[in-house]
Length: 360
Image (tube, rainbow, N blue to C red; front, side, top):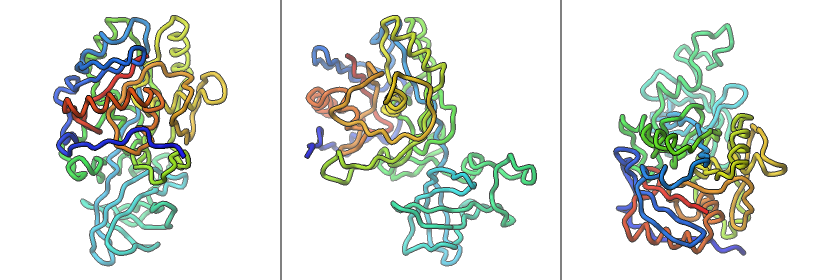
């Protein structure tokens, strides 16, 4: 049975409750596989740590305000939900949390209203299928329907009624107004994630300018980050873990940029584990090619990386698929030393925390 490669105890005070301000002043731990060295820097040093011809691959997903608060219409009891995705028939897939059991057919009044959800069907893993209803009781429908031109899209509904889906270890998930901007990368574009691709939170226009001056390029892929990515693995044998799928995409333009980088001898630097999953999915069976669809790729030791040469990543919770991916890339002994050093030097951990750059 595979043994989890990294178990560690983290003092509670090292779990970052606020983002670094400014973003690019976050601490950066540099781990080099070639000589097993560790170096302490700041994120704004990133351009100096990479070389001309290198290429960053960023995940341009945009976090939607997926946390919903409301009351059960029948009992008045408090209810909390997390939007996961929209299905093909304009229903919503949700996680629900409330006292007692909820039942199909129940109505949930979202606060502040007016928006009502009708619970349709219980799904596996604690999920529910629900239909959003407009104030007059009409079902929500896509704007493309000419008969419902005034109906808001799902993203618009979430922007109006939803809250930032902060993980529970940040202020017990309670948002502040500034989280709408700070729990989002500055290059976020494609709405659909329910959690931030946190390695990208540290980038600023100043960093991008420094990269351009050094002749370091960047391109984007998309992976709509789901909640399951961050959940601890429950089974003892992590190889038996069932990876939930997430929607991703890599365009022909990004594939061409990566091919050009490799041809000139540059390194492909994945910004975050989510970018890694897109790149390695798109190169799973053949050479890297444009791709779009669902991926359930589960990367854990040992793994032969086909595209990624370097990795920029935040510090992750124990027993998660994220940490297993980094363990496969960084090698377990180096990662153990890096985490021990980060804890000893009081780095800030998790979503709003500091970051690490793993170089060849």
